[in-house]
Amino acid sequence: MRDVTLSSLERLGLGAAGAPVVDDGTLTFLMDEDAFRLFYDRTARPVWAYLARITGDRQLADDLLQETYFRFLRSRAEFEDEAHRRNYLFRIATNLAHDARRRAPMVTTPVDDGPGDFAHEHADPQSHDATGQAVRRLDLSRAMRRLKPRERSLLWLAYAQGSSHVEIARTLGLKTGSIKPLLFRARRRLSALLQGGAR
Amino acid sequence: MKACPREPEVVEAVTRGDWRQATALGDNDLRAHAASCAACGELVTLMQALREDHAVACRAADVPAAGTVWWRATIRARAEAAEKAARPITLAQGVAAASIAGVAAAFAGVAWRAFPSLPQPDPFVMLALGLGVCIVIAPLVLVFTLARD
Image (cartoon, rainbow over all chains, first blue to last red; front, side, top):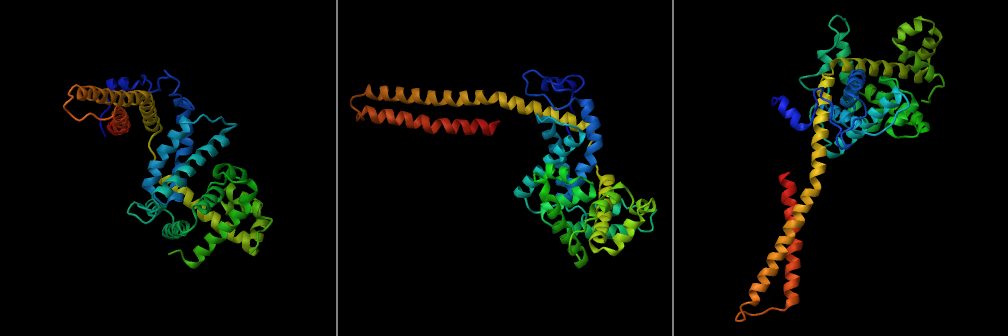
């Protein structure tokens, strides 16, 4: 990466603290840097995990993570509370993943089959069940990839993250009442894929 | 298989933490139910698998530092603002180029008429020719300018 000098930062109009210069009203962000750091530290990993699982591609998840936070910062939305803000962030991530899928439907760097497979890298070595855990995660990964994108999102948000039906509806842009049957169907499909072997 | 009315309780118990721990704290009835109910049993199995996957994925996530993300965002916002500000200039350049082409065509027409020995076309044909040049040149200039940007 190219070195960035102080003068080059000055040319870009950034202040000493790295805050954007608000000279024409176009560079205002949703929050200041300190608030952003706190919010990012709380949400970045779950957002990355969500992106990696619904796209099935770690590299794409890396790219979409940066884009998600950029769009979030540039938005002019107002939030009732922290949960609302978080749901909005996941909604941006969902839309970006959807757009990326339309542009390039082929998976390039699968989440769990590549050399950087975190199912194996990060299984607890102390656990007697480490290998079993890795195998279970690999099966789950393969089964998830055979689901429809919306089914993946529904299952992840509901069961992996523990989001409520209202939160899921907000994130996916669906009606709250439709979440229960959709989730049930997605669950049945995942279960059938796991029992039948997702290979 | 039909959905079970006790599913929300199961979801809550698994979401609270470890299912075994949750049941040890007084949800034995729920655990017994999940053992006998196909829907709830399936739900517990899937939830545990997904939550385990979530925990490992979060640990494995190699996300950039907050400061880096913020810095990239400010630079990109600045670049986009500069691009937005330059858009009217690009447009003006296109219009100017088209005008120059039109004036050049008009001069060429006048110069042509200065030589009566040459075949003299209809003035309306000349005007149409001049307009045609403008219409062709302007978009070309815009395309080249934007491609350069």
